[in-house]
Structures are given as structure tokens and as C-alpha cells.
Image 1: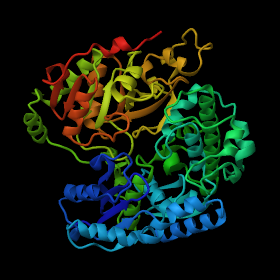
Image 2 (image 1 turned 135 degrees about the vertical axis):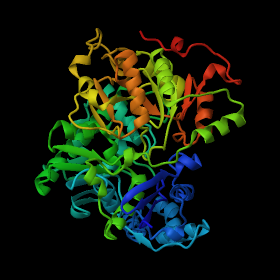
Image 3 (image 1 turned 60 degrees about the horizontal axis):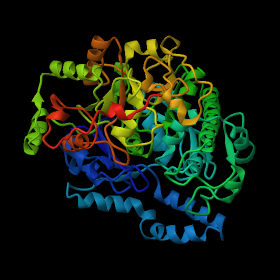
Image 4 (image 1 turned 60 degrees about the vertical axis):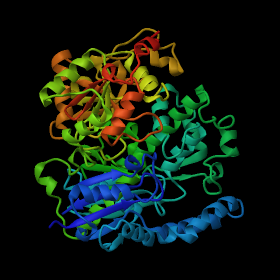
Length: 611
């Protein structure tokens, strides 16, 4: 029997569970995928049950449970923060303290109780880890490197907001840290809030908005908000922030500095929001690059690994790579708090003697991050038969051929294959895909499929062997966490670019693959191999054989405000609610026009103006 460790993250956002066998991740998933509550913070009961079910075990078989942060230490930070903010922070103190006094400070006991309520066997011993230790372990232990510098940047854990570690063999050694309230993640979240987006989920919107603006506030941010040192360490001027004193991120000081009140959620986007996004993005990149340079100098390592919420800032990751500070950079695909569940389990497994067996194969230890539930063709057919849904069961070869043909004809495809991805990115298992050569595809997918803001960019998935022909990328990017430039050979210099501004920039094609080319000629690239995701690799190959193009649009299989689909039922419901044309569930293919409840409402392409 393998030595099994169960990891859990919970009670802030993106709760998750992960199961590790002899140091190898065998199952991991966010609770939101099962509960259907976006960014669910509750105890991950359903995710734990999935992990046990996937491995065919009970809690009796689990050696230890690892929790991703230290509640007692976090409680001391909360009390210290309230005391330092008195008396202005009384309202936040009044609203928050009861939960800490009643149960949050004894979260470890609550987790034990929740596990006992599963009725899945005895509750194993619980090992409490530090928040940034869990991030660091999630980054280094499954990485493809025997040793590496480890950089973790997020909002805040217990006290740490930025930490540097040195990973060697199966251990991680702390090197330095920056402490709360000085936080690069919270600086970015303050601008997310001020621009009218939701904190802890809207940061990627701000990153996507940045190329539409000019960084005209960047120097003001550095003059007033953040003091950046040559080694990347920094301090925030807390007079401009409200998160120490209340339930909001910014207040009057921010409004005076940036010319008026925050944008109302769902309000119109103005030039100010474009420029604020561009400015804080530029400052963030500057800090991250300085931190990476310092990490190289201090550790002497040739490889860097990243985790923490800021590691999901793909543009900053791309800057580190572009600067060639390290030979190679690897980012944990579940870099946020969900990944803390995996990191906590991995560090406990390492301390129990688990080796890093994946190093012998030359790849990483994440199995393409395909660690969630999968469904057989038999299960899929049984569901569809129960719904009376017309479908065709095909061979794998015929499925890829017919889907590639549909994509080449301009159809949008729901792609549900194999095991679900762990982390926020769809990597070709729970994806919506389309033809990147179609100038209408980006707006169509946003407005007619995803029901979200038109400015949001889409990512390209590309066959790894063809990546350099289309993108300026010199290393693998299997987890869609690096932004790089479109290669010069694929660019189009269109007329009117200099005069256009704001969202009008969307209307100008910039490359041979306009649907995945952002307004600054960049793209968030996913390189695909047969090892990382065989079904997706075969589809890309089939599409290339028909069109000569080895690239597809790849976005997550969900609509705005909902988690990525996790089951055939959710995939079929999303298919029927949107303008997706084809649905591939395993080797089963469904056509929208064949479905009994579908009524044609016109071609979505007719609603997307290109001029």
C-alpha cells in the first residue's frame, strides 16, 4: 500500500483537496467544480470525497492530512492588525472577530470534525503547515528541477506576502520574506477594486485590460504608493489603503490621487481604467523582475519556480523569461490557494521520505495537471440516453477528424475529454475551442458563448513543435501561464492602429491568428505535447493537417460567473445554453441542430461587427 497524504485548503477562497501517493499527485480538485459555487471557500467535502473515490480508498488508508496554513499564527496577525488600526478599524473588527473567536482560530479542529462527518473511516493525524511553505512546496516538489530558486508572491498568508526559498532534492529552505501589510498582491487587488472588479477573482480582468491603456500613472504609483528597493523588496504607504481599517481596499486617498471615485461595478470602462490597469501592471512587472534577479543572485540557481496568486500574472511571468534571468522558469498550474492543498500534502509526503520519482523521466510531476474526475464513454452515453439527446459514438480517429473539420468550417466546439484540469486554466480537457484565424472569433466567444466583457483575450493552444513559428517563446509553457509576443513572421501591420484607442483596438487584426492576438501583439501561450494531453494534441494535429495551422483558440468550458464544467451533464447544459455548435464528450459527438430543444436564432457571426 502506498503512503497516502491528503491535503486540504479551505475557508478563504478556492478551497481544494489533493491526494498524494508516495509523493506523486494522484487526484486534486477545487471544491467549486462540484458545489458549482464560484471560488467556493467552504470545507472541500466534495473534493475530498472525489480524491478518496478516485484512488479507491477510505480515510483508513490515509497516513496523514495536511492543512495548508497555520490558523493560530493567522489569528495573531488578525489581532495585531486590528490593534494597530484602532480605533478606525472598529467596524471591521466587530464584523470579523466573532468568527475568529468562535471557530476560525481552531480551524484544525474544525477540519478534523468535517472529516469525521464524512463517515469514510478514522481521521488521520493532521499536520498544519505555513501558507507560503505550502505554496513553495507546490512550486518546487513537482517541478522538473533537482534544485531551483522558489519565489512565492500573493496577497497574504499568515504574515508573509512574498517569500524566497531554495529548493534542493526533497527540501525547501526559507531565504527571505516580506510581511503584511506590505503586499504586491494586495496592491494589485487595490487597483482591481478601484477599477470596479471583484477582489480575488477580477485580477485577471485587470491584466487583460492593461494593453488597452498607457502607463501614465506608473510613476505616481511608485512616488506615492510603493517604495521599491533594488532587490525587489518594497513597502507600501498605508495611508492610501483601507484594508487595514475596513472591508474595502481603497478610500478617499486613492480617489484624490487618481482623479475621482472608483468605477462602479459593471459601469462603463473609461480611459482612466485602461491607464490604471496599464500602470499597476507595469509596476508589478518591475517588482517581479527585480525579485527574480535577487533570487538568482542569492541562490545561484539556473532555474526558477513560482507559486502564489501573483504567479497567475502571466504577463509578469513572461517578463521574467524575456529578461533571461534564469535558464528556465516553471510555474505551478494551481498557483493560487487551491494549490496550497497540494503543496501541503507534498511537503508532508517529502518529510515522510517520499522521493521525487518524476525527475527520472525529465518532466514535471503534475501529469499535465489533469488530476480531476474523468468519465467513460459508457457513462457519457448513459447520461445522454437518459436525456434523449441525439449523438454519434465515434472512434477516436473519426472524432478528431470530424471535430477538426468543424473547426475549419468556423464552428465552435465544446471539448470534454479525459480527466479535469486542476487549477484555474482549461488546458484542453474542459475547453471551448475555435479557429484562431477567424477575425470574429474573439468577440463572438466573449459575447455569444462566454457572456462576458468584450475586451477579454483568449489563449492559443499550439503544438509544441510549432510554437516558435508562431510565438517568441524559448521554453515549454504547458500550463498557459506565460504571455509572450507573436512572432514577427505572423504579424500583420494593419492601417489605423496609431489612431485607435481603448476598445476600438479590438477591431484591428494584428496577426494571422487574430482571435488569440492581444492588442499589444501578445498571447498567453499553451504548448501541447502528447505527454501532456494526448487527445488535445491529436486534435491540434488533425486541425493542422486540414488548415496548415497548428493553433487553436482555447478557453475554459463555462460561462461568466460559473465554474468550469466538471460533468457531462454540466457540459451538455452549457452546450444548450450557448452558441456552441459541436460538443465532443469523450468519443461522443453532438451537433446543436440535432438537439430536440434547440431553435435556430441566426448565425452568431452576423452579430459581430468587424469594422
